[in-house]
Image (cartoon, rainbow, N blue to C red):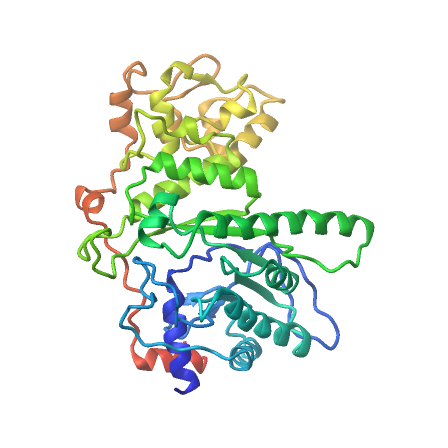
Length: 432
């Protein structure tokens, strides 16, 4: 199999791994070496199938020894198989970087033979990039659950970010759909990476030039919609992962039915893209707005309302806390008002020290009054055109009108993965 065919197969197989994040690490250029990394982000690159992405996102191999029911690369799947050698992948990465196609590498893999053998292949690639080629660009590598701690430690010393995919939201689902994986094999590497980052932080305090271990932190990904867990269960798990393993991000991936299996949704079931979107919105509330998972969804309301974002939904279920007087409310309460974000809340705190704010002033500060006016007062006055004692009336006014019933029941996935052969050639030759 020629190198271009391998690239075509393994970049397409990597499309299910989510990596929509900034690099999170600063590394300046160094004489005699190639590349650098900037914490604020990386951009402008192309995969072999023509998509504009941040990284060369590729699998080391899709020849998997595991037989996870939901995975298109499972052992019993009838799909074309390919495996890069470390030399091939290193050469591709360096050539793409020199042509300015990419600014870093996102490397994952199916389990080839066993977890340790797969880790050794990935480790060989990273060593060639870092030590032989002097590559100082961004590298994100997926840790293989079940691999030996020694190999994971070596990977962490060469990568900027590592992630361990939790895959499914519960041990019961893992046992049903991925019996060769277990909670212990997934959470064990997460704990090792967390502890390694902490120890490295202590070393860097004492020795400024100590080798860095996963300087951009770790993340994880879970599949949404393949199993019957509620949004509340997923959100509670997400909160627990942030708290216990100090993750940078938890990514959610809407399950796209690709296989026929009695324990999975039928192949004609649309992927739950709107549900994925709501989970990302709730994840933002957990990380930046001071919410707890148990507040956003409770046992009586275990799933998100498709017509309302999670913050609006929470506010309508807690109208006893509103309206809020914008000139006196603390920062924590301002963050809970629909239409007020982190930046606008800070601007309000700064501006009201000099003068009492009115609704025109709030608009200039970036507050979305279309939603916020139902939950705020300025100088004791409300700008709500509707009675605020009836949450159903307010819901009708602030619900997202752009979402139709067809989208709720059958959202459509945009077609990103069917370029022509000509598109692929143009992408790799720099014509796109």
